[in-house]
Length: 217
Length: 221
Image 1 (cartoon, rainbow over the protein chains, first blue to last red):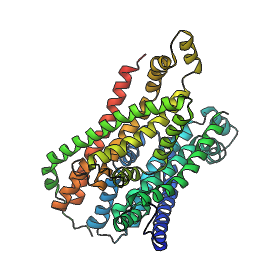
Image 2: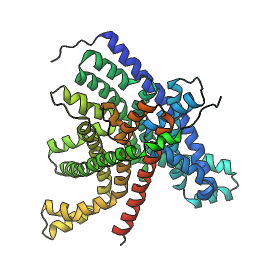
Image 3: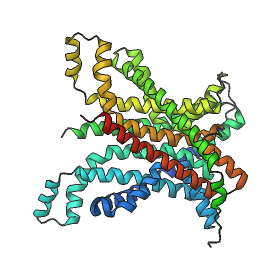
Image 4: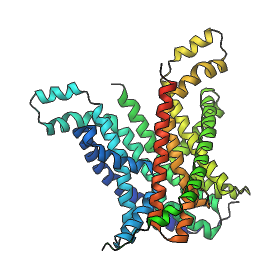
């Protein structure tokens, strides 16, 4: 049962796939978070009516399968606009917007959790809007938003398994290529699953810990 | 730069086939949710049972479901079980994969919902003569399902979006699979998938709105 044709070169191939998974995730989470914060603050600031178009667009990213988003973006950028764009770039663009759509929601929730009276007090002490945002809202909203944000980042890592559709060979795709060659699905899938689990589980636990610790006071 | 002729008619001509696919998608999502809820209630009972083996099973299930990609779980159901000689059809694989995922996430939702139900209620029920099972069945469970109703709606939307992953194990009768087959025939990639996206969007909206109406009716007191 433990005989395997898996070689060191195959491991290197898997490691490369894992590297791509991590890279796509990092780029998308970073870009998506920056965008998400901008969108979230904007939505909170201008109110539900004026922000309706943005809300609608962001909602689309959350209501359509990621696979279809990737295929559509690929077809739109590559076939229709005829841009010479790599699959990796398409994957990062779509995953960033996807992250931003969820992040905006988290940010808005975080800002709304800051009591209006606290903010009014800050403003009446002479703080500007920027100071109020930086010194009062940011620390308080982070407490509410960070656990959800960790969950979002991990979700994006797991969803990055779908970028194979735009010809990006990330971890799960590398695993599948090896499965086709070695015909040992169980072993290879276990290795792949273990990789995701080892990254995701401790961080998810940490998020849960933060949530518990920060919720009492 | 922009010399592409959209052929929406070609895509719209295939709408009936895609709507048939949407029905299969709905079928998978509803089945996986129904079985997933039953399994999640069972796993919640495992967690509450106080028996170490049962709660370990529940914990392992939840952690694997939540910490690995859904696509990985579907591969496991299809290729992983295949190496045990258990060859599932694409439909069964996708159903099993999504159900596993749903059950894990829903168990976690139920855990959150249980926190909102005061311990004293169980004790009150027990002192009124309910058995351990009866107290859970008649007192805790209905409140838990009610509190977890919104997360359950979200999970249903996820289940629908996840059915698109069936294509990776050779499923071609669901909405995504149908669209992909049509794409191989016509090469109108953008038009076909845009239409599929609209259908997916409408389905998720109908479900979210429907759930809100049901919630308003069921939980009006």
